[in-house]
Length: 264
Image (cartoon, rainbow, N blue to C red; front, side, top):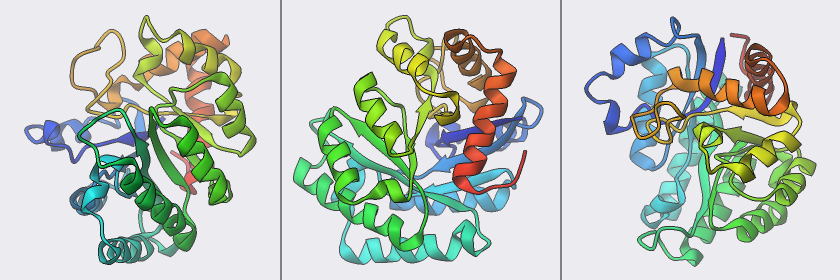
């Protein structure tokens, strides 16, 4: 069974068929899903999904594009919510995320605002003793420097949708991070990512889709779902000279180890 480490099933893209689609996951070979929050509202809807579907776990945090809404009070509320629902306390929250920096979109909050709340959420992860799910786009140096400054490698986690150089991958690898590899690896223009995947030990790779975004070939441009993960596993296998079944099994064990969940 496949372990999906990054999806957004509370997104409105799934409003018309969410229950039906999630009900098909076991038949499609998907054993576990971590649903990733992006703002304060989706922290609530993600927990609701966890209550409805036994195979769904949660990462709670605020994406850099949503940091403009944060206050000290809301972060305190979020910290308490995570602590109460943490897997360490018998709940289903397995990580803090997705958090980070995104300088790509001009509409995002200014860099100083993003950095302020990224730092606060890095410290929050320490307070609740959970790993991280890191989002970083066009912010390579700032993201790495802040993770290093806050010693967030002690919590560990996943660099989601990794898109930087092999050299930076080596630095994250030395910190013990995992790398989320999704549909982009199947794109024709993904030479740099393929080189990174070839370089990385399979023991530091986890599978993700970022559903409903970033569908792999042959479904590029359509709504994504975890049912497309076999295409990603097959491509990783081709790059690394492995069969897809081995990729699926090893990445599942990687995710189980990181998040502290039972076998699937």
